[in-house]
Image (tube, rainbow, N blue to C red; front, side):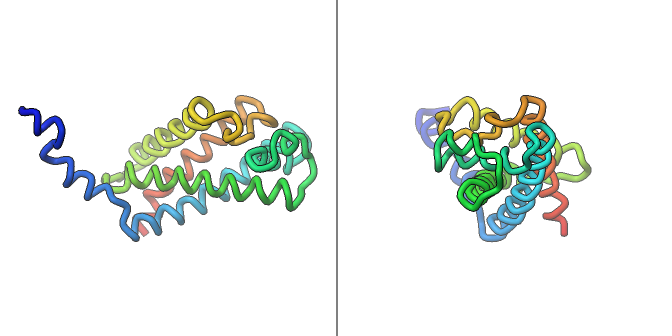
Length: 171
């Protein structure tokens, strides 16, 4: 193996070409993002209702990205905090759906084990990025209103939603 192979591996260009997101993959990622947005929003609302007595509190907390920590203290549903929180969550999980599709869409995923593992891997990556890479201002905000077990449940719902992408792709 020469220096040229290290700088420009022989298969790198063909690998990158196959990993480019074509319009079909992008369309699928947007569908999976919509599913993941709906399911994670429902999970946050249900867990927030259970833990704080307010379904909107957990969703409002997401809007801390736009409105600062004041958003995390809001309990009532509102256009300003709740809709912004839902929109930010939908955008974030759609981004993770795109990452998931970019990493796993070309692989055969028969059965349940591989799609679940791929969904779990993407959700784990999302957690690491959300809580250990980005600045606090850009964390999801759920942590301001939900317990650790509830956070784990939200990421579990994300994993399951991403796993469902294999079933959606087969249709």
